[in-house]
Length: 250
Image (cartoon, rainbow, N blue to C red; front, side, top):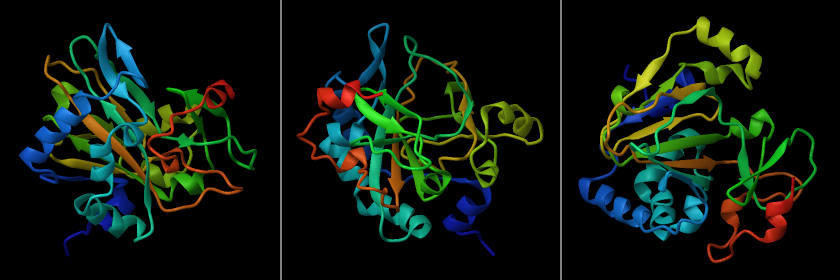
């Protein structure tokens, strides 16, 4: 029997689907993300290699996150009731090239600080409040990485430890032991393809060996409401920027 997308995600913690976006849609997104204001970006030697708050900064990316083609990927995994909660643009170029050590994605972007059991520590990233939530919140999420350029081993494709999401939150001092007892998988993805993954999947990436772009739109989706009146940052109206009060919380 052929595995469904849900089966793959439940067993391995990730799945690759090619040709999710057409060539025309990819070209449209390259233009749209290329004209985003530099505010909220991470710069290196004058080049941007990461833009946070992408859903709130780009109408085109918000439309993409809400589109039928993306919803058709997410619904089998999270069910019909989910929302996009964060978007980030990553790029690896000659002047902005880096490697990412093995880790899990354990923070979410929220609008306000609310003291609640299991939430913390808190941090600020690109002027937006972030917090590490309990594992059950992360287990109700899925990430979709949409590739605007070819992405293989030579230009920093994501490396993952299959099924590591089943271990829950892994302490930093235990990551090496998990790696030693597991084999990694390199997630090569073509232009317009998508890599779906659970936030708690252990993953890493190497620096690119090529001079070309490696642009990825990373979208997080959640099928859970936050407790005690806490709100996802993406629920903020697009025309309302983070306030100074947000930026000084710690």
